[in-house]
Length: 218
Image: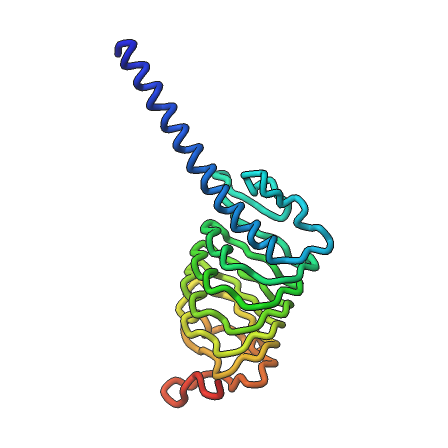
């Protein structure tokens, strides 16, 4: 290979490195924007989000955030942090997120349907908050989900049958809400204990397939 060929090869290698770095920068920036949108939606009296500095492009340096080796956000750990406010649709942009832990706060409002875009999510823990509205059908798109804990909130409406089609789902707890209709008994719900549905006054019990509509009393 001549000098010109070596120069071309070197230039190509630099271009590949530059493209890789730009892609990493862009993804980190996008994830940082999504997380900062959450910060704006929350009141943080104990300053647990103080390190979430928007001028730092890479959110992997922020407290309560875990990233993989590619600097993509995989965990958000803000359980029991005395946070007030609402969840934001931007969370659905964290496409590599595996654990979303926001239990034991004072989060209000509804569960954004955009969370259904989190195809790699393993654990969704929103229990012990003041979340209202319905459980989005879109959560049934989270095909990696194993743990879904929404207990001790103010959720209403029926339990989406789409969740029963998530074969990876092992733990579901929606007790102590205001859900209605009947309890799914097929698919991933087949072995969920009934006490994980208790204290929903309008919930009518296990669904009797072929005998009753699952959304009665809703």
